[in-house]
Image (cartoon, rainbow, N blue to C red; front, side, top):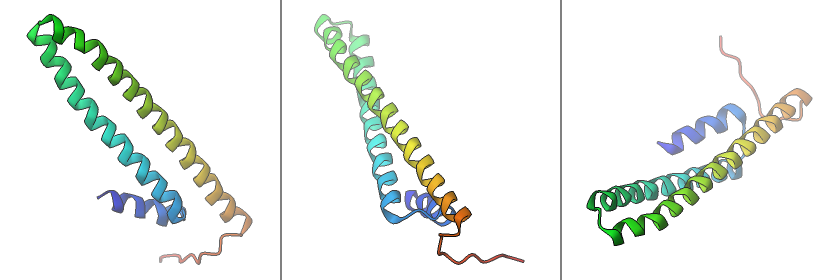
Length: 108
């Protein structure tokens, strides 16, 4: 499914394979962190419900880890946004200057 999304981007914006690989790598990193966050949140909730002092104390560290993960995800999305915009700009420049060597076919 991810491959379909990225191949569609590549066809539309004529991005090279390396750019698409970097996007895919970043999206996988983000998904891994989000999966980890889901586990952290579940553990935090269980600790909170138990109302045991040692479990509640552990939540402090878990919440810090969760916050750090959220910062990392925000940073990865920022990097993705910047890279995507840069790739689109480069693709647009190639089209407007005529340096893009791909053939275009018109339908109809």
